[in-house]
Figure 1 (tube, one colour):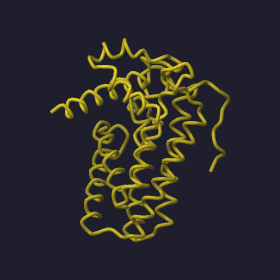
Figure 2 (tube, rainbow, N blue to C red):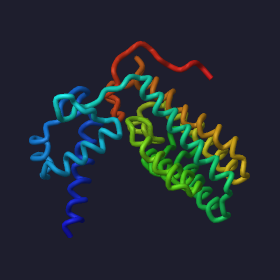
Figure 3 (cartoon, helix red, strand yellow):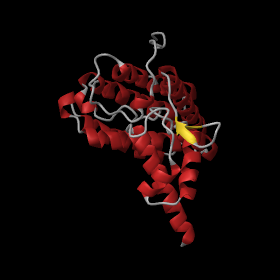
Length: 253
């Protein structure tokens, strides 16, 4: 019973602190006050410190030489590199899945999720069931990754997607107000289908290349949400952590 309560306290600390950072309640460079935050969350400082260690590992916090932690900041290039790393790892797990082969049941399960995404997208951007799409997109990425049957690779991928704006749904918050980015969902869905087809046909190199290209769609959304045409009230989790800097967009493909 004590162990269960300990885990609950840790999760409450982790979620509470992470959410405060990602929505901008704690800004880049802010020191984390253990006393104030533990009182606010209704937990002891022990699970809070464990949560802080986890968020240091995720890159959201950084250690201060004099003790304690402060909220990290990122350059646009840092976020781009994290997105590319996610693409590399997804490419690796998709290649492994293709080379090892998948069962008919696994393929059919992924195809069912793909079909649900088609339904959520509809024919035009005005028909999109956005909330449903976000859930299904996360599910499909998890299902495709799980096909590799490699706990080691999946653990590394899970660690990377926790970094700010590196996950497959990082830029899907409030996109109903950004028609330009909504259009990219249809491109992403075509890539989903091509990736699944490559895995099912045991085309490892193709699956890997498609995964890397798929992740790079996020570069375009990052540029939009940091650019002059973005909506000022758009809330992309973690966007407040990105420092202003000269344009560092990668060269066009």
